[in-house]
Length: 425
Image (cartoon, one colour):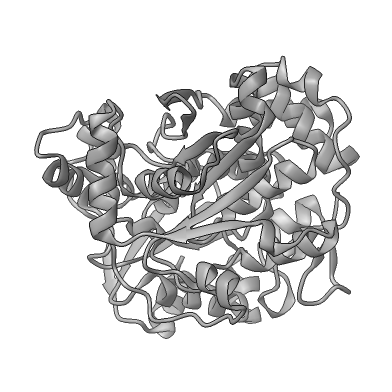
């Protein structure tokens, strides 16, 4: 698999290089130089998740990794289901929260960890990542206890839910967590600054597990195929997929699945008040505003890092951005939607509710809708219980960590402090 740097096309790397390196020169994202459609979609849809994902990923990666190696990586990473559940007569939910940290990030985080474990050399690796909520837990648990790999996670202090924080800030060992006195964009900016620091990169073997890492994206492609496989022939005919969008990695993966030949009719990019992309699609001007805190905190991103990949894909495929649906939801509208979904008998959380709302608003009569449920409602226990007016079930993965002490450091928005911590590792 060959990839190029979107910002500097002269930088060309292999899949393994892209996974190890994370970002290219000038903080550019890596993008596949070839996205050849699969020619056996119907046969793939009859396979199980692991076997199908092996075929899809082997097709993309090529002969750089043997199919046996890819199968082993996938089998060790995807150890949990991604069921499709009916919500209304023509709308289904793809539940991506059945992994160890109860969020869709488990797919990408675990796949990346298994990739690095399978082809890393004896050198030290330091994973530096920023999280707006779910990435941190998925990455921390995926890499926890791995030899010669240190993980440092930056997150905005007070801007993720208490149970989200407990899930990854109570591990210790090779996992270091830092609460930053700023927002997610501040955290992400310091991650990018670290990658521009050549001395630091070399000294600690820097890598990123954010959705900017190509391995994360490839893993996420697989659950779009899994969802499609669970639908009947009629539901597949005019399928519209609504994706709750923050950093836009999830939507990028879905669009890549479409580029590979999965016959999804169209996509909807659903955001909260941090609506840089909806405004861009409507007005044609890229104008990020200051990030605002919302109920759907994992989507509190004003400068989505994966958007350049979406624009690159549309350019390569000759698609028009006018075909991409979009919409944003306020917190008040999100609360109302959660109550409406609860009356339908489906318990959800703010991110999934935003995707559901935009899907119901834009779905046409002859279409079937699928929206992504990216996290378990219990990860947002306080807000969901207040909105629904009742207690919700807390899975063991969360309950077992709820009373453990936080092990995080607290830093101001100061790259020098983060650099010092990284060098000390």
